[in-house]
Image (cartoon, rainbow, N blue to C red; front, side, top):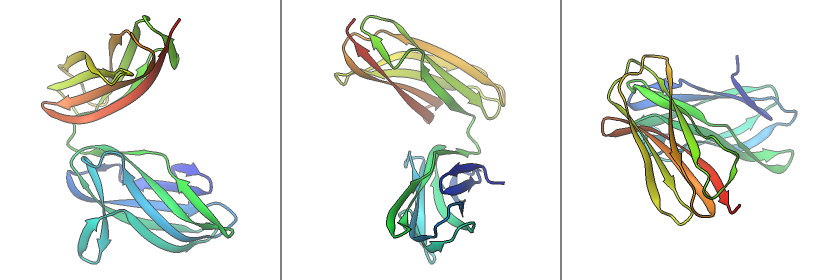
Length: 225
């Protein structure tokens, strides 16, 4: 059963939970289009290379890189590609394919897949600015982060930060999460008031002790009344 689809590729990446250190990820691809895809350069990328780095296998040697090559993938045919990764923490990964389709250059990019490290206690499920994308100067806004427990957790900390259009980073809240049961969600909020026009970047950072285990970002735009 294929879990995800973006024309003309059905795809699946597994496992979604790995141990800290070196592991293997398997990327399954199926061509659901009508044309044969040729000369495919298939890559796996990490959005946070400090936490998950992708390695390429050259015999028994592992070097930094992400590419594998496939001569052709015919309609309704499937393939599996295995990538070596090193994990220091959870991160989002995605795949890209560059090749030829019907004699033309072809580019395909998957959605993001969250790969969890098995010993982590929790992760940030979402970060939302509770407002329209555009707001006005002087209007106080609420930011909400949802944290989900992966196992019974204590000693977690959540920080909210805002980067102003002029480039200044300001901490808005620091919250100690005393207890978060396995599988349960908890929502936490902070407030800030835009004082200048332009784009604000809103960040949430989740820590286990001193170590950051997750982060998310959202944007809001402030304008004059």
